Length: 220
Ligand code: 5RP
Image 1 (tube, helix red, strand yellow):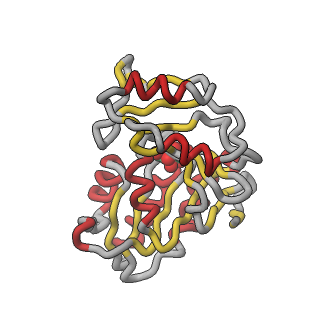
Image 2 (tube, helix red, strand yellow; image 1 turned 120 degrees about the horizontal axis):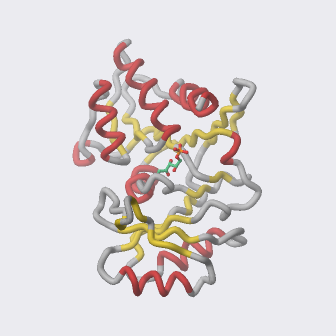
């Protein structure tokens, strides 16, 4: 928890007055949102968009001004977590189920800063099960198509019920093990009708800030 907080607080130093800020989702992004809230109380002038209802609620509680997408042309900076980060700053995201909004926000951000502890760094993506968001309609057929990649997979559940995303979709978690060609896999999965988005974020992160166990940060 401490290394997540350290990474998050360092990332927040990149935020300047007047910026539109994308708020990530998860236990690392939580610390960034907390810090942004503190800085807003001290006078920082920003407007924010959230990548989940959870982050939106936290931002509201902390008094961070939120803005509708219709009112902005783009996002200056987004600070978000990740489930895995490789040496090329490719990511697996979506462990918290917010991958669709996270990718939409990331794709419109001038700068995407990823914050993580050291446990998220990997040589090759894929040990963490890749989240794939799918429409509820036809989800069992979509699952069969995904199974053709040869990976064990399962429908994400909570309390023995399908987990439903903020967008009303399901998530299939695909255990690839080691992903040799992330871009190719990303494109092939997205080509399946019924797939809304997958959790591979290829060449999207501009910077990764790792909070280390010794209390320092490392920037990649
Ligand atoms: C949510 C995400 C999160 O950023 C990711 O799961 C990392 O979460 P945490 O910071 O709690 O480890 O992609 O959809």
